[in-house]
Amino acid sequence: MAILVLGGAGYIGSHTVYELIDSGADVVIADNLQTGYIQAVHPKARFYKGDIRDKAFLDNLFKQEKFEAVIHFAANSLVGESMVEPLKYYDNNLCGTMVLLKSMVENGIDNIVFSSTAATYGEPESIPILETDKTEPTNTYGETKLSMEKMFKWVSKAHGLRYVSLRYFNACGAHVSGEIGEAHNPESHLIPIILQVPNGQREAVSVFGDDYNTKDGTCVRDYIHVTDLAQAHILAVNYLKKGNESNIFNLGNGVGFTVNEVIETARKVTGHPIPAVIAPRRAGDPAILIASSEKAKKVLGWKPEHDSLEEIIASAWKWHKNHPKGFEK
Ligand code: UFG
Image 1 (cartoon, rainbow, N blue to C red):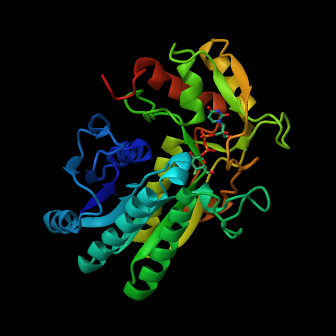
Image 2: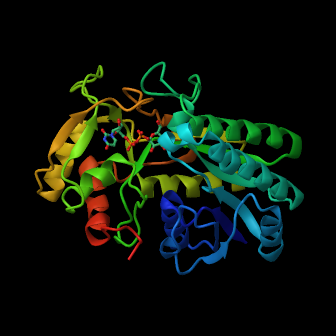
């Protein structure tokens, strides 16, 4: 039986497929290639181009292949965009998941692991953030992910389907091979933006605010390597296969770095001075987001292995240096 990876041509999805195939799994990918790249599809995975909002596409897929579990990454994930195009997020993330769940229920597929986010918490009430903390998203993206979690809860009660929701903190880094990595167009995330400077694509990096109540005034985030996130998905599938109950886990390193510290580490890794300029705060940025991942460690047996920021940035640099335009030629 195969594992179906929805959104397996995207950043975290493609890295999870690489780890699944290394572990000997039979993998099927479905992706609409809206933000994913065909070049990121592992050559040993069977690929179907299609959209999760297309029920006939999903029904056919579930008839053609036999699945023991689904891993669901197929969503839009940009906080800023979600504030100007909220309905795009409701449509793809929520309506897409509703169609998917209908098809899964009808086709008797009852295990699913899916991407959630630190953005479900909003402004944290305490640090590190626990799964039981209050969830009050401050953006549409986080709201749709929280609504997805709730949809899973009620569908699970009615139809017996079981799920694991993984709330990622700041996903970053690239595959050890340097063959796949992060690629957004235009680039939206801190580490790829910083690396555009030594790559000759940007003069300087803007630091969004230096007057936060943190050690150097810049925002603190919990940066977690994409391969460690990928491993957590494999553990979550195994957890469900053993018959365990539905659950929600944070995934982060439990250590925070300021924007200035990330830039300084990138200078060390690349040997480039990387000029930085202070810019106004970005709307909606919480000052500090750090995960408690004790639950994932205890219950899933998860252990992040690439937890040094230097290693994380070095892996990203290997990818961006050799693929300055991402997957585009
Ligand atoms: N930043 C800059 N300059 C830039 C880009 C980012 O200073 O050019 C800062 C941001 O203000 C933030 C930090 O760098 O303080 C990290 O920003 P990212 O955009 O890389 O990531 P976010 O923390 O905003 O977003 C991440 C995930 C989202 C998730 C969110 C949860 O990428 O999917 O955490 O809050 F929703």
